[in-house]
Length: 357
Image (tube, rainbow, N blue to C red; front, side):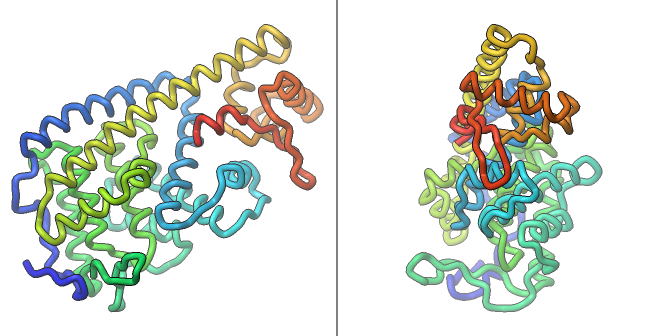
């Protein structure tokens, strides 16, 4: 293998790596990471309506994953845009919503077919709103903030497709590796192949969660590593670089395992806090305005942090006038905050947004 930062890395080694991946420190960390992930899988089942969890957490992941690529939007704009198809939003908000769309697409795709190069291409097309697929032209490089080239990925469509075929085979191979160790390898290899002109980072992070779902380590797409990467960005890029330049895998695998463990426990805490807030809503409504209490109403204002009268109508909870009265009543109890934007009236679940953000 030869590596030169300024030359296409067509000698990127195929998988599996020709080195010991499951070292003693890695195996020890696998145990704690797998335990945390299993705990998360169990806790997620306790949410009464799992759309609450999926919709809310996916939006935050979409925002954070895009932020890694310097695509920045606010939670307010994002939740408003997610609640209102007529709200245009700025280009960054639209791009974040496309990430969410791609993630849902991938999750649905797994119900009928396994992870594959075709799915990767379909994901990036949604993210980029483009028909372009695998890179064909030369000249793709990755540079640092100073403009210095730090990596040149493989070049040539046939070479890239061969390496993706090898990656696909590795994903589905029964080679005895722990699936969490394989996840770390898969993520590195996809980012090193860098098969698209743009959107590789976001596509790679979607592949992470789809892999966990495909391996039945999670039932729902609720574990996202973007916040961990943002907090420990230097470790992320250092780990990737150490593999590329020196084939040092242990540091990278330990980084990914710690990300899984840390994020699992953070998500468990978030779920527990959401459940506690739902219970507070229920107690407050039952004690103060029992006539309007319904499980469906509470779940709806947690599915949609920016709630509108139309949502209650669509969910067949109430007709327009009654739906308006319900939301106004929740606002009078300080459970929701009324917010008028132009001709639109929203009822904002500020406490939920605070938990999610």
